[in-house]
Every structure is written in C-alpha cells, then in structure tokens.
Amino acid sequence: MVGKNRHRSSSVLTLVLLSTTFSLAQDQGREFHWSGKLSPDQIVEIKNLNGKIEARGDNSSDQVEVTAEKSGPDAELVKIEVVPHAEGITICAIYPGGSTRAKSGPCEPGEKWQVDNHSSKAKVDFTVRVPTNLRFAATSINGSVTAEDMGRFVRADSVNGSVRVSTKQWAELSSVNGSLEASMGSADWTGTLKISTVNGSIDLKMPSELNADVRFSSVNGHLDTDYPVSVSGNIGSHRVEGRVGNGGRKLVLDTVNGSVRLKRESL
Image 1: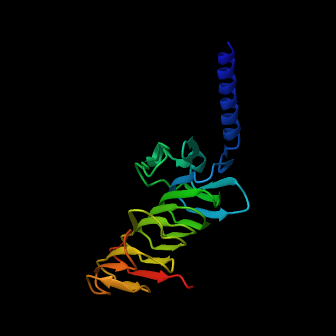
Image 2: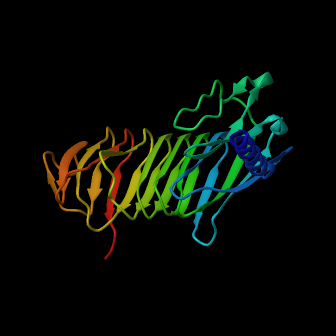
Image 3: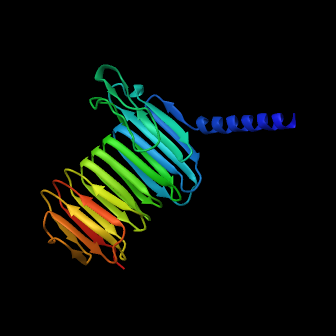
C-alpha cells in the first residue's frame, strides 16, 4: 500500500512539474513567450519556416527565454509548439496550410524539419536568450540565423538566408542561398565538422592552435587561410586537401559560388 501511494505521489509531482513548464508558454495571437530552465549541456532548438532567428548567450541567468513575433497575412493562424524531451526543448513555428498550402511540422527534436510549401507570407521572428551552459540549434527555411556569445556547441542552418555564429566551443553551419560567418573558441570536436553553402562565402575564425585535416572545395571561389597548410593541391585552386598543425579531426569547407576565408585567432 505504501508503494502504491509513493507511486501515486510521484505521478502527481510529475504532472505538477509538467503543468508548471507549460504554464510558462503563452501563444496569444501574434505574440509568443516561453521561459524555462534546463540542465547543463541540454539543447534549445528552434525551427522556423519564414523569419529570422536571433539568439544570444547569457552567462548571468539559468533561464531560457524565447519570444516570437508573428506578422503578415494570417499570422495568428501560425502556432508555436513547445516539445520537451530528454535532450532539452524544441520549439517550432507550425504553419497550418490553408489557402497558401504552406505547412510545416511535426515538431520533433533533431535535424528533421518537414515543410510542404514555402509560399505563405506569414512571418515569425524568434528572439532567444540562452544560458551559456546549454547547446543551441536553429533552422529557418526563409530567414537568417544568428547565434552570438554562445557557450556550447551550436548547429545553425538556413535555406534562404545568411548564418552567423560565435561560440566558445564549435559550430556546424549550412545554407543554400546565404553566406556563413563563424567564430569558434575551441577545435575539440571529434570526427568531421562540416561548414557548407551553395551560393555564398564562408568566413571562419578558429583558435590559434588548430590541428585538423582540411578539405576545401568550390566551383567559383578560392581558399584564403592564415594557417600554414601542408597541401596536396594548390592554395587558390578550386579544391584543396591539406593538414593544419598535427591534423587528426576533419574540417570540411564547401561552397559552390563563393570563397572561403579561414582566419587564425590573434594571440
């Protein structure tokens, strides 16, 4: 009997905690607000269809704060969905379809993001404050992504928009039509780190002590680097494979129409 009561109390406590979390989310018409606390190294993830995502790291607070402003025709029909999960929180702008047939979702953690049509004129602009002990991920189909002064790993990508990131660790960036700019304070990733765009330049600042096997490729562009590179191609050609420092981990820099600048952080 004691065991049953303990189980029942635990269930009630879980429901209360869940209710408290969701009570902090307010989606009213054209404005959305959410705040909450995550454990260190969990992830805050934002997914959008039309509109920019702007995030900034904050080392003075342990609260995540997310604000979204909706604008354009039928903007009030766009719902902001909050999905807690074991790794953190995922927040998505869900477009319902309708006359424009623009539809997004479902809202799920991870890189998958289904968009059936891009024609909606409704726009959602996200502003995010992220404690520096958390990871951050952001995806926007039509809009720029910015994440500055972050403290952990960042994944940021756009289809039609530029991407700009600065973090004390490292970041994975991609775009189709947009330039990429990143400043990374650490080069301790394992395996392969890929930075890629189709139509745009790549401007990347890395730590002074960098050990990586670098692969660069471009159709209409060249590589400019501050690092001494032992290469198997010519610097300035459309494809370079070389080693910086002692090598080891892989750094892939790909663009079709654009050049790459690999900068060395000043000592």
